[in-house]
Length: 594
Image (cartoon, rainbow, N blue to C red):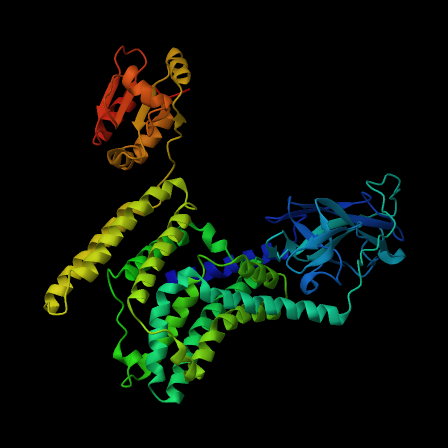
């Protein structure tokens, strides 16, 4: 009981501490795109005196803030809201002169601030404020921060400063002068034009959704979708329409999840969901690569996806609707790797809008993707115009498989070098496992045999994933490129040198990298002993390391690793992949670096 009570007290104190910390406004605000500081005009202000606060903005290169409320997307222009004790009155904030910026998404010239600029907040201290005292002033800051391709709405919060009030304040030395008010209204835009811009942006979102249906990444599920629609047309019109609408709901569900994530990120974390941010996550990119590889194997006929009778036949019940919902959601997910720029533009515009309008724009993208299927299922007469199946369809399907592999290769290029080779190797193993799953079993085979074969395929895939897809643990060795002069200089300084001769086409070299040079104890020893680690690349014959391997070190092939120990005439060499313990033993004998 005491333990539970202690936990409750701890949580309560933690909550109080966080609430107190959150209630204190900082005197500097830093975000990923803008830094804001505050400066006072005078060290102290006498009762009845006038002073000002200077808000110093520093926007990162390529980012800007909207200046004019009339032209800012969604009205997200820079807003300053000062607050303080009753005896301090604030005048209207004085903004700097803005400059013009042409927004390609809205096709409109806007007024913006960028780089370093200052906003001044004049204030007056009342005569009745009293003598010596201090007053805390907090300034709320709002607005969108945009670049050429995206907008963010940071939760700036409030920036604070303490104003000293003294009846003896001289107010002679000002830290800065307050300029004459600068108009930042920019070009006046009528309400009709604002409405037009919103409607045009929503139309852009709708067109972006339509474009998703021609994305190559969606093609693998199109045969199943067409099959489902054709089968549905044989049933009653009511059920056919209902199944089509449920499929469309599956598409909309995916975009509803995006809209919900956008709301959570803005309200809770003060950031926005940008289309394409997911591809900055190596895990997501690797997952999409592997999914595209599996789908390409499906297009090649290595395995098949069976449509259950509950989905395609008349005997189906609720499970058919569940399948339609899931297929629609999958189609929307598959559209993400190869979306056109129009989709990114529509999504970027949505991020600069109020939450309601942003959510509407995101959902309109989903509506655009779902509309063709809704029309097709509600008008069965159109199905008669679909081309009949034949060998051409099978060849087209296989050709799409190669397109998916090309997209997968392009995505692999976005992976960090440390993860790239692992994903490539696992893709091959995964392909083998999928082949086992689909080709090693037959319709006449016993159920127990099918289970054993597919269980082995799953276990093999899991073990390979654990081996190849693990993120590098701990720090990596800081390899230097092969340089004969650098090596000789290190030897002359009595510094140990480790040379790893390798090549991109050498499989044993990759194994040695994982078994030896990825071990944490080896990495720590190389760093702690001050060893010069040199990666000698021999991938092509014209590289300096390739010539040195043969002419200087008289080694016939890779992999080979050479350790030069200060004071020893002969180097220590390892050929092969299993020498981690021997290397560790030699490294432990070396003196630690100064």
